Length: 136
Image 1: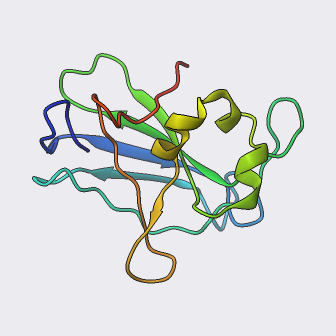
Image 2: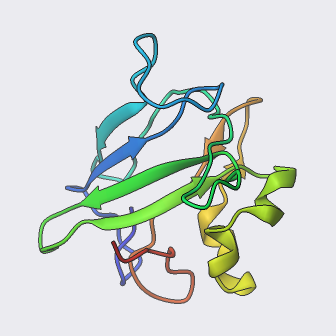
Image 3: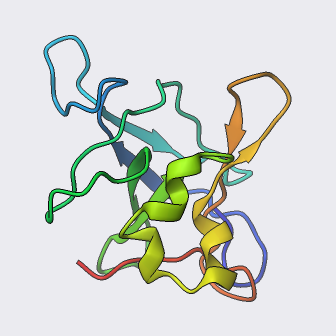
């Protein structure tokens, strides 16, 4: 989590909510919820499964994604975003991602990192590469 001055935010709380690999929410075997506090470097971590596709309000399938809420000191309201997966062919048909201008969609797509299956996604609060946040 990076602030508008490019400095790490050491007191953010990042929550995720997601479907399981079959595209189902809240099963007994997989809750799909997690919370991680950022450290002095602004880093937070989750270990999870890639979610399956879920239907949106109109019944059309959404691309696999993880819903994100960010809370921190000085924020009166949570920030709401999503994490999408790199190279996912269904990203092009996702109705929520389609609402985001093409030049800004990259802020919602994680980037591949070292080991297979390891991804990086940054929350940038302000500035040139500011993460897209949604009004709820």
